Length: 505
Image (cartoon, rainbow, N blue to C red; front, side, top):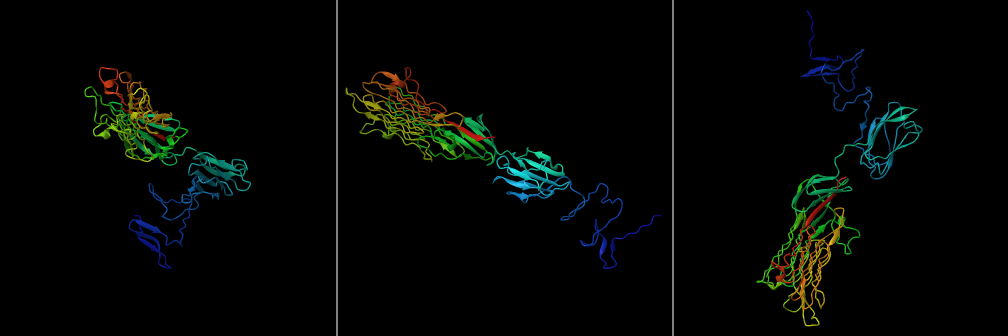
C-alpha cells in the first residue's frame, strides 16, 4: 500500500512564512522577492505536459540567451546621431536631414537593427559607423544606407569580418499613400491618372491617399454654353463657366492670371458628376419673325463642391420686356441684341453669375447700330458672347458693322494636352447694303455668328463645340433660320466636360 502525505501549506520554522502555499487552483513556491528558489539537478522540468510556463507581469529572465531578434525601441525614434546598444533595434527618421548611427564595441553574438522610419534614406542617408577599428563586412569603414524604406540587421561575428548584415529588406509593406478611384474614362499620363466625364457619372474614391503620396485631385469643371439668339441681329451665346485648379495651367500662364485655387482634397466616398448640356436655340419661322424671350442658359456642371454655371444666351428682338434684348447672365454672359430701339447700345449680360472667386467667366459684348454707312444704310448687329478669359466684343465700326466676335476661352492642361475651353459665340450681323462677315467665336469652342446684307444670305450661325462649353453664334435674321432653306443649323451652346486628375504612383 502506497503512503501519502497531504498538506496545503508548508511554512518556515523561523518566521512561519510560507514556503509552499496552496490557494484555490494556484500553488505558490517561495516567500518573497528576497528569497530566491534554487532547484538543483541534472534536469529541471517546469510545467506539465501540454501546459504553459509564463513569466509574471513585470518579471525578467536572465541566462536564457538571445532569441536572434532585437528589442525595438518604439518609444525613442531617432532623429539625430546616436550610439546603438547591443540587442536593440531603432527607427531612424531622416526626414529632417542625414545623420549617423554609431555601433557599440562588438563582441561575438552582438546584434543591432535599424529601419527607415519615414522612407527618406534615398534623400537623407543614414550612415552606420563601426566602433574604433572594428569592421563592417570585413572593411574598417562606415556603411551608408541610401535605399528608400531599407531595414538591416547586423550581427557581430568576429574581429576578421566584424559586423555582418544578416537581414536586408527594401520591400516594406506600407499602406497605399496615393489616391485610388474609379469612374469616367480613365487614362494615364506619367504618374497621373485622368478621369474624363462627358456625361453624368460617379467619381468614386476608394483610397484617399496621404500627403506623402497624394490626397488631393486637380479638376476642370466646364458648364454647357449658352445659345446664340434666334432673331434679328442676335447676340452670341456666352460660354459655360470654367473652374479649375491652379496646377492645370498651360505654360505660359494666362496674361491675366486667375489665381485659381489649389487641388481639391478628397475622401473615401462617391462623388456624383453632372455634365451640363449646351442650350438649344429656338427655331423661328416667319411669321412670326420675332421672339420676346431669350433662349435658356446652358446647364451647370458639378463635381464635389465645385459648380460651374451655364452660359447665358444672346439678346433677342423685340424683347419683352426690353431687358430681353440684353445678353443673358451666366457663367459667361450672352451678347446684346443689335436692335436697341433707342439711343446707345444694348448691353451684354453679366458674366460670373452667380459670382465665384476666381471668376468663372466674363461679360458679353454690347450690340447696337454702327455709324451710318456712306450710302445711307445702317448696320445693326449683335455683340459677342463672353468667354472664360475675355469679355465678348462689341459691334465693329461701319460701313459693314459686323457682329462682335466672341470672347476667348482659356487654355489648360489637365489631360496631357493643352486644350482651350469656354469660348464665347460670335454675334449675328445685319447690314444695308454691305454684306457682313461672320463674327468668329472665341478660342475654346465658340460658334460663329451669322452674316448677311439686306437680301443676301452670307452664312449660317454655328454651334459651340461640344465638351468645351463654347457659346453658340447669334443669328442674322429669322428667315435664314427656317425650314426649308440654307439656315437650318442653329447656334446651340456646346456641352460641358468634367476632368479629374491625381497622382497615383
